[in-house]
Image (cartoon, rainbow, N blue to C red; front, side, top):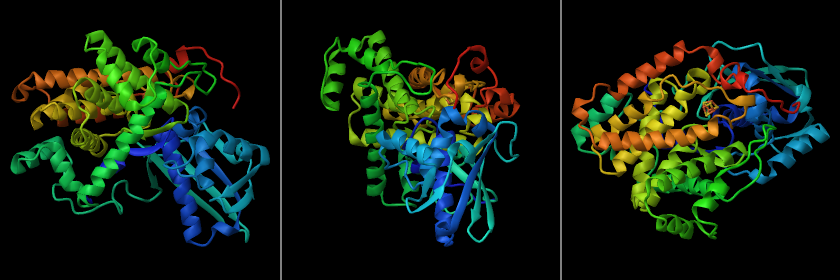
Amino acid sequence: MPHECISVFDIFKIGVGPSSSHTLGPWRAAMRFIGELEATGKLASVQQLSILLYGSLAKTGHGHGTDIAIQLGLSGEDPVTCDVNDIDAKVEKIRRDKQLHLHGQFTIGFDPLTDIQFLYDESLPFHPNALTFLVTLQDGEQLASTWYSIGGGFVVKEGEIAGGGKNNVDLPFPVDTARQLLQWCIKTGYSISELVMENETAWRSEADTKAGVLRIWEVMRDCIYRGCHTTGELPGGLKVGRRAAALNLKLLKGRTYTDYNSWVEAIRAGGEHFSYTLDWVSCFALAVNEENASFGRVVTAPTNGAAGVIPAVLQYFITFCDGLHTEKIIQFVLTASEVGSIFKKRATISAAMGGCQAEIGVSSAMAAAALTECMGGSQRQVLMAAEIAMEHHLGLTCDPIGGLVQVPCIERNTMGAIKAITASQLALQSNPELAKVSLDAVVKTMWETAQDMNSKYKETSDGGLAVNIPISLPEC
Ligand code: SF4
């Protein structure tokens, strides 16, 4: 079996909320499918197109904007660059005109209400997040193409091997487990982030990796800042109000700032009192996930639902631990990515496969590890921090109310961030040689727990809070 190679830019991807598996993944599948039609010269002769959504994509697809993402992807919009303020208007135009401009080039008749079918009672065996594109060409030929959104925005086409494709390169330090990672670090003397940087050079120059990582941070930073300054109600009909902006204003005693740097300085000037710091960590996480729930631009970290944990902990480090240094930010992101990769390779980062432990749990472990390295922890302490953070998310279920990534998701990011900071502190104050549980053991435990978990708790909204909180959402 080929060794799976995962780059920092596979784990951290710029995209649009609210869900990496239900929004970004289907969006990317639609883009790839359209790209294939174009490459084979069939795009111009498409006469009719419909989409079937299975399993978790059907059950929570409305709330997660799966149908919207697919229409945008088929229209040639890129989640990295599209204007998120135009999304509503574009989708409304398709609905009103009953026309889709494939790849922005060829117009076909398309009614989202009938041409996107949510098959609530059907699942495909490979993965709960499946979708099929059905196409009729002008000469009568029919095509069917099935794709799986396997978590974190990763997609595979039917027949492809996840991770076994063209992303593979010869890494100087191949890593599948925490044990291998530690062995390489001991052998080379590298920190975890230094080892990751060496591996990244198999794809691109160090300068390009650094530039890309800083671009990732810019998007995270802008998302925090925007979320801390945007009021109103979140979309979807659950009538959840945004809280980050009000909390931001309260903590700053009503003062406002016009740019990120002066805002951070003002936060710092407020001191380091425990409850003040805690409020800010929550505020940063709320801000990102309120943006995510509003189809805003976010970074998968490693997923959209959990997109607030890592930015909140990094912003905490920058604000309260004097971490506003380019090299430190790069170190943070690279370390976090390696821990995310190990979970992806040995367990899952998909809530439809493993519940919320696979999203918030993994993001918390990533953040804990990154913070620990940036605070001067040894490689063993870094791995210990990741282990502690995941250990206390084991069994966490996914039960979003109304299939929306809002309740419990937004607050859950605050919990993941706080647990990450606590895990890091514990690891920094501990002797990792005495730890009873290794990171590899907790990864294995998370995966076994995922496999034993009832499907009601795997992003289906068939159990938990999703069925115990009465709501009435508008008809889709
Ligand atoms: S409950 Fe957790 S895993 Fe499920 S959608 Fe919300 S954040 Fe994602």
